[in-house]
Amino acid sequence: MLLAVISCATVERRVQVPVLSGEPVAVRHVRVLVGLSTDTQPLFVGADAEVLVYSGEREPRPLGRLALENARISLSRRGAVITGERDWGKPAVVLMPASGGHLKIGSTAYPGYMVLMKPGSAVQAVNWVEMEQYVAGVVSCEVPRRFSRSGIEAQAVAARSYALAQLRLRHLLSYDLKDDQSSQVYRGLSGTRSYGVQAAARTRGVVLIHDWKFLSAFYFSTCGGHTAPAAQLPGAPRIKPFECVECDYCRDSPRYKWAVTMSVADVEKALAAAGYVSGSLQDIRVAGRTRGGWVELVEIVSSEGSRRLSGNAFRRLVGTGNLYSSKFDVRKSGDEFVIQGRGYGHGVGMCQWGADGLGRLGRNYAEILKYYYRGAEIVKIY
Image (cartoon, rainbow, N blue to C red):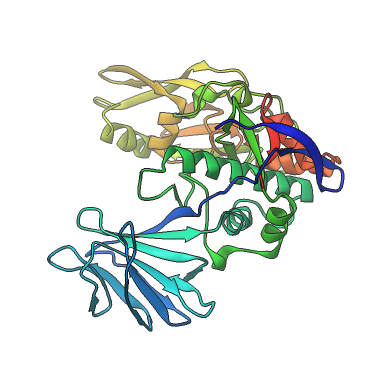
């Protein structure tokens, strides 16, 4: 996508952002996978107003209207979507609340409308939501209200940029993003707070671009003093905006420094299940680091030999809830491993607690974004 910049306009006080020339860019709805209904783990859909139902075809046709109250989502034997007792005779249907109401999946309310579609033997629930509503929801889930205003606004721009990059990459698929940490955390209207709405409004249409494309603006909680190079995150392009930078602004994070202990037996079980331990586990050693102290390679020493794996793979296998980042030291003490580390998350892109710290030092959101995504440009597209 080619972007041409010709003028400047104030998006908020103290921040000057170039404005895209010509007509504003039209952005379609974001498609967020919010659930998967199966025979063993069904989803239930409800609404606080009457619901209009359309076929999920290229040219949707009205199928009916009904009241939905905790209706089970399932499939008929012929593979048609069912809501409650109603078989719609189609592998995909669109649910649109009438009269300004909202749909619910379980207890979570969502803006926009919901597409229910059949992939295999399950039914996907995909929320189609307007971009700024989506950004407000993500900001509310990704950072706390107590963060600085500039830090929250930087999060809004990063979330919008990441979403737009995914819209471009996944336009031929059934959804653009998931609602969890594998994409961006999103809990619909139920998870949206006023500070998220305000941050989305104050940065409306502002995005990061690089090489004339929307930047997939990765971010994470805490870097512990230095962000990580792109090689630490599978799928991250090795471009200038994802080069690592020093960051001494996240010291207020509860995960700036941390220490955990794990039993040798638990670690052995996790690694053996993935084929990295033969016999009994003897030791774990850091075999290589990247710039900033992030672990690049881990050596697994067992009674029948040694194997190596990446620091990220090791973290994933022993559990990201146990190992907060791949910036750590490890030593064996009796029947336990003592692991001391810094940071929380994958380490690539913007440090959220660092963005808060920079905001508290008086930096505006554009300055924060330029600090973490060096070489990227900031532009207002609508």
